[in-house]
Amino acid sequence: MRSTADRSRNLALADRLAAEAAAGGAEVIAFPENAAFLREGSGTPRGEDLDGETADRFAAMARSHRAWVLAGTIAERIPGRRKIRNTSILFDPKGRRAAVYRKMHLFDAAIPGRVSFRESAVVEAGDRPVVTRTPYGTIGLTVCFDLRFPELFRVLALSGATVVFVPSAFTAYTGSLHWEALLRARAIENQTWVVAPAQWGTHHPGRRSYGHACVVDPWGRIVAEKARGDGVVIATVDPAVAEEARRQIPVLPAVRRGPGGLLSGTRART
Image (cartoon, rainbow, N blue to C red):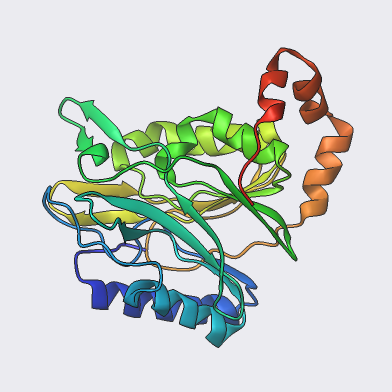
């Protein structure tokens, strides 16, 4: 998607894309970060409750298409606080919240002449990893800048995740250098599927996303991709592929036994 500051336009596009995905056989439909609203300016966006209008719209998509729906992220209101949270919600086919993850690593970057962004000025970081069990395997949730923190993905894998979602609005400059390399690395080192719905194109002056929404298998192969343009990427994600990779190259048991075993006592919330 190429979301803008026009919430009604963005949600109408999301409805259309969800219908297209469902018609193509998708049973799990995932949207990018800030799917409903990608603001202009530096002020704090208007926060919403987890049962607010935007979340309800994605819950309705789940019910309508009898599919699991990952609502990318919404700006979650924090009662009594100025800041919001950048929150990803997974809905089950009945429109119920199956998992809620609040972005832990916030995008603060200053690359002269390229990127200047300080997410921490308006967003409060989450404090816990999240996994949830589904008929399609155990799913781990992350958001965009989390991709640069391999320890989070390791915790999700050690907590049983065979699929990790990375809804993103990766900047065009850093994306051209790092996006594919990081997605493939996280998939390979944790032997998980990585599903990365992405924003693309110019959202407003000064904000441009890289795009390249893709699905990466546990061997690091990109099995489906759309570089740019609004649209749908469909792939078959089989947890058995992750299980096979883990049998053939038993990385995670070695992590638990070896010096990296410190992570073995850390678990994601379910």
